[in-house]
Image 1: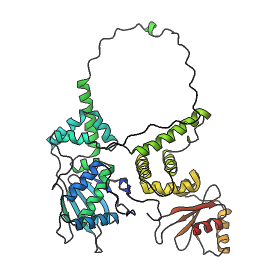
Image 2 (image 1 turned 60 degrees about the horizontal axis):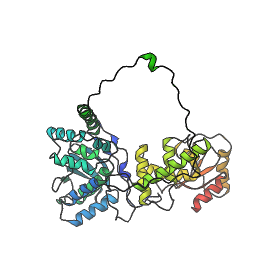
Image 3 (image 1 turned 90 degrees about the vertical axis):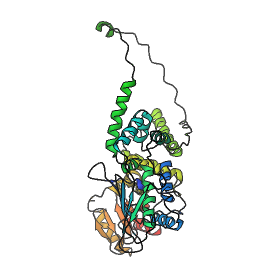
Image 4 (image 1 turned 180 degrees about the vertical axis):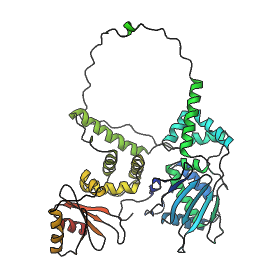
Length: 434
């Protein structure tokens, strides 16, 4: 995005859903436009791609599907609400008033769910995969063997739209379907909700059935002879511990992670493992953990900021997606925080996220200094000084430095830019030059 450091396939549909009234309603906020070349797929997972295949089997009109892809890429799909058997969203078309789009999918019957849940509970790996938001092929195969179709087949999706186009689907519904593929890509529980059951209910029921299944298969424990208490508590000779192994001069390389269907991105795992090895090596050699004071969010931002700055590669996008999901943030939140971290470390991140009221002195002298340098009168608010045009901003940090921020005209969407400086005029000159 411009000026955001994102290209290609944007995983932002993983944004946290706004909570619905119960477990059977989830609303996902609108996704900003993509800014790549348009050739990136809408889904990376096999189940997300299967959804796209089901959509494209609805229509013989490639032109409508192409327009739908363009609408989805352009951010014309508003918030998406998912309930059992139904997906609803408003899509902005050529007219001022958006169209109401709807997509229906048959829900599973109670006997279908019983069959499916029993089949999944019999294999603990399936439950473990769902807990990590994955849907392995074997899970879908298990359901299919039981006669349960989780993914839609040809003709299973039933579209509807308030526009006058009677195509099945029209370009507005096609855009909604493509955005749904992104949601499914990051959370297969959305598909299960469409089929009729919410995430909380499914996990509770799967846990109960898995425990019952394990209890039935656990062999009876053999009789163990009792030991008198005085014997159990008697002092025993314990040999001394062996000498610790010598510490390697450098952290070892992590193992090579294979690329498997439904598995985590191997290069993102490699990056996380390399960072953990370096941190452990520092702890072994110095006895100190330089990152011990960081919160989980700060540490996630630090990890993302360690990636190369020249654009987002596929590996970096995967790492951003993993870190954003683990911290409950969006990838846009993470990208903005990374820019602040590169600007000033943990202090730069605090300037981004925590406004404060600075004392009189340096802050109060900044406005006259800017005016003397020929700049227009900046508007103060807490530790912020904002250009009257609304595109440039200086923020005063606890370290006494001024941090430059920039926003698109008319947008309250501030991004860290340039290098901070103790002199507000120098900081603004660097910001203007960037």
